[in-house]
Length: 118
Image 1: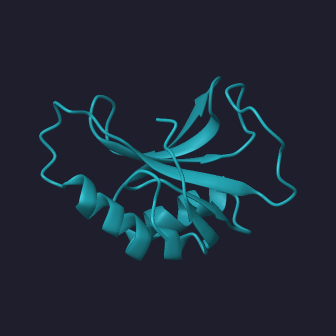
Image 2: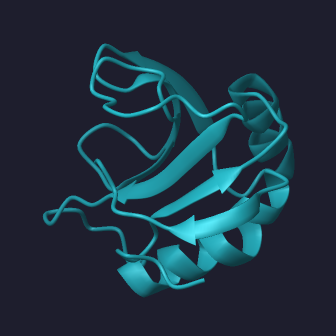
Image 3: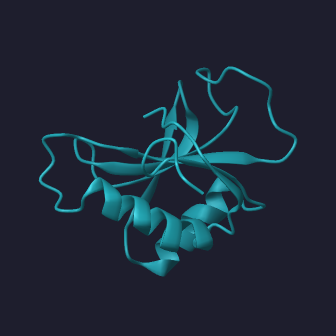
């Protein structure tokens, strides 16, 4: 499972965004929030505005999506990297965290590399 871009993956899950939100916050390593965007639709995010964030969106959830809407909920997780961020985590460390910790919490399956829209 090599990402097309570090930290960017498409995956299936039977969980809703709300269930993912609860699972991620219950784990406690990071604080997650929910957002709403005209372009992306509803999404989850960690990190503060103006800093590096990890975001999760559902395909087909916003106006920016072009393509067929999948029969099973299909999600995308990606890193929104800010070059001026003082976050000490490298892109490789964030990618590893996504693969080894976050995706398992989301009951992710059929995980594939993707290009982040963020």
